Image 1 (cartoon, rainbow, N blue to C red):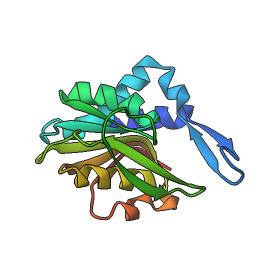
Image 2: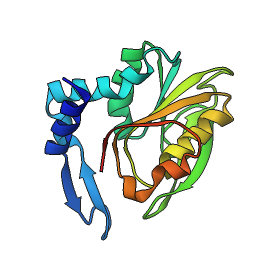
Image 3: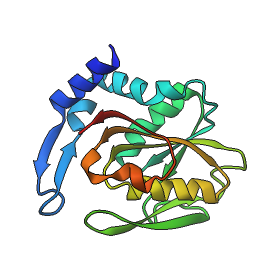
Length: 177
């Protein structure tokens, strides 16, 4: 399946949910992608294949939908998976980073021993909207000595300008809205 085919098929199944989780937000529901094994496999390949030869040592998947894509991407790239979690979910010593979303503020955490110096990390999430979550995850990776190779997402909502918050970091989106 070509990248154009993957994008077309994703666009055909992703649902728009108005006013979720709060009024004024148009939520992109990716669960129909998860329900189709061939499309899910193609989406994972589209998110991971640009990094086949990038020397990625870790995939940092952002809670929670970033886990759905991050684990198979880590397997495809033959590297470690690191969960980037919401507060209170990790049992060991952790590092935190607060950030702003378009409708609230939040915090992310990673185990303090998740990466060593020189780790090459691919940050993964389902959607890039305002960029706050991906930027916070990237800052955590860098604070722990890792290098963010790129941020890879299934969907990018371009009108929200998330790439700007990611500064000079490389962003790869399978589908853009």
